[in-house]
Amino acid sequence: MSATWEKKGTNDGELTFEISVNKIDEGLDAAFKRVKKNLAVPGFRKGKVPRQIFNQMYGEASLYEDALNVVLPDSYEAALAEAGIEPVDQPEISIEKMDPKEPWIIKAKVTVKPEVKLGDYKGLSVPTADVEVTDADVDAELAKRQEQQAELVLKEDGVSEKGDTVVIDYAGTIDGEAFDGGSSENYSLELGSNSFIPGFEDQLLGHKSGDEVDVTVTFPEDYQAKELAGKEAHFATKIHEIKTKEIPELDDDFAKDIDEEVETLIELKAKIKDQLTQNKQEAADAAKQEAALNKAVANAEIVDLPHAMIETEVHNQMDQFLGNMQRQGINPDMYYKLTGTTEEDLHKQFEQNADQNVKTNLVLEAIVAAEKIEPSQEEVDHEIKDLAEEYNMEEDKVRGALTDEMLKHDIAIKKAIDIVTDSAVEEAE
Image (cartoon, rainbow, N blue to C red):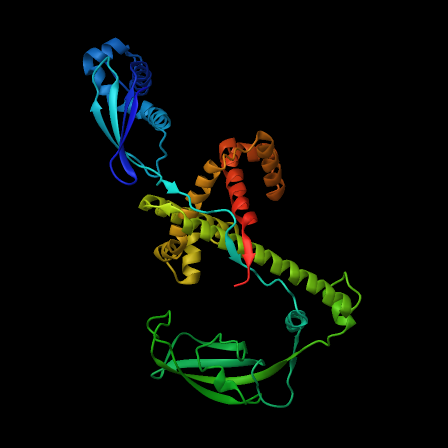
C-alpha cells in the first residue's frame, strides 16, 4: 500500500492512500453478495442472479459505494500505520480516483495528536505534606464518633436550642394562598442544620413544646422553584416535641460499643491515630503525585490541543460518572431530576478539568516513549489477575474485555507516573 501524510496545520493534515485492486475485488464480491440477496431479475430465482448478468444490467460501478464501505475501514487503519500518525477524530474522506481495474485513491483530512516537547519531569520540587496526627486530631475524631452515637431524648423542660430536633406541623402561605410543598405534619427538623429556608430554623429557637409560631421568611432569589423565588411566605407552625441529643460518655464501654476489636478507650485512641495517620499519608501521596504531574505538564510544550480531544475527554468522564450512577440504581434522567441539573450542566462541570487531563495524558505518553517503557507479557498477566480479583471476575472474562495492547498502555502510563512521582523531591514551602 502507498500512503503519504502531508501536514497542513499544527495538528491537521491530509492522508492520501491507495486501495489495491485485490482489496477492491474483495469489496466488490462482498457488496455483490449483499445486493443479490434481495435482487429480483426475470428468469432467475431471487438471490440467484449471476455476477456477469448483474454487471451487464446495472454495471459494476453500481457496487463501488458499497464495496468502499466494506474495504475502507481496514485500508484507512493500514494507511495510518504506514504514515505513523494517530488520529483523534473521525476523518473527512474524499475520493480522488475510482477507476475500474486500477487502485482507488482516497484522501482523508485527519486531526492528529499534538506533538509534545518534554521539559524536566524527574527530580521535580514539590511541597512537603504534613502527615503528623496530633492528640487534637484524635479528640476531634472521637467527638465525631460520639456525635454519631448520640440518641435523641425528649426534652421535658426548657426551650429549644441549636442542635435540638423539633417535631412540628407547618402550613405555608404566600399572599394568603397555600402552595405546593409548603405544608407537613410531624416533621422532624434539627435546628441549625440549615435544611430549611434561611431564617426558618432561627425563629423556632427559644420556644417550648406546644408553642405556636408564625414564621415569616423570604425565599432566595435563586430558589429552584422559580414560582417561589424572592417571595415572602408565612408558615403557621406548631411545635409538638423538642428532642435533645444525649451524647454517650467517653469511656471504655463506649470504645467497646463502637469497635469490637478494642477493650479500652486507650486502645481505641491508638487505633484511631493509626487510621488517621494512614489517611494523611495516602492524602499526602496523592498530593505529591498531583503536584509532580502538574509540574511535569507545565514544563512540557504542547502547542495546541485539538478540540476533539477535549470533547472526547469530557464525554468519557460523563459516561464513567453516569455509569457509576447507573450501578447505584440511578439512571441519567433520574440523576438530572434529583440534582436539578441538565446534561449540558454536567458537560460544563467536566469541561473544567478536561484540558489539564488531556495534557497530562499526552505528557505521560511522551514519557513512556522517552523512557522506552515496554511492559512484558508477565506484567500483563499479573494485571489481569489483579483486575479479576478487584472486580470479582473470572480472568478469562477480563481477557475478553481488554486487549493486551490496552493493558500494556495502562501499565506503561502507571510506570510513567511512578517515574515522575518517585523522583520528586519534597521541600518545605
